[in-house]
Image (cartoon, rainbow, N blue to C red; front, side, top):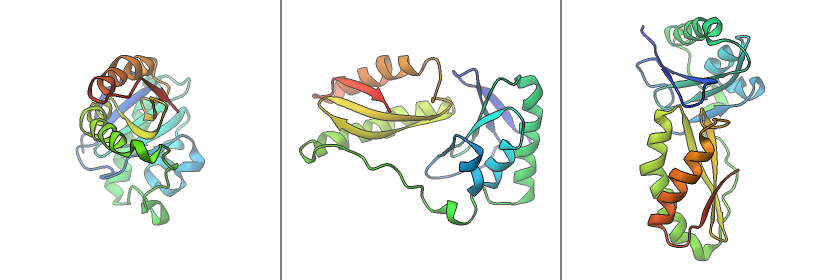
Amino acid sequence: MFIQTEATPNPATLKFLPGRDVLPGTPRDFADPDLASGSPLAAALFQIDGVKGVFLGSDFVAVTKSEADWAHIKPQVLGAIMEHFLSGQPVLAGDAEVEPETSEEFFDESDAAMVEVIKELLDTRVRPAVAMDGGDITFRGFRSGTVYLRMQGACAGCPSSTATLKHGIENLLRHFVPGVEHVQQL
């Protein structure tokens, strides 16, 4: 098994591509070891000293490190990913296979049509680009001209995330959706 690695805009996060499906469907973000209990893969990665976060995408695993040096932990991460896939264990186990509960979205019912357009633009134009960088972005709400988004994986805490939100996503949404004035991260 050959696992490719890719740098992300976040220097603390590397993207690992095992050459097979990792988690088709809804990506999962594990910000700490306690949240990883439902994923044998994420739990194994958190056993490595220096791993601070694990994000499972459709065909990649993004690992965020703490202060550790990539030269020291990258071989261990590669080994843990390879061992997991060769073992035949599921990526998610038991109750974790059920879709995660998401925070309820908030918006006024009179804005429902606008929210659908915003979600469509996020799904078709933004999320694929963000996934290429090892992360995900989800709609959380809309109120008084402001779109609220949640950034996950490599995008959470990335030095360029503010630029992505303000210059990329905000400009895109303002161009296509009259009524959008700002984009804010939750």
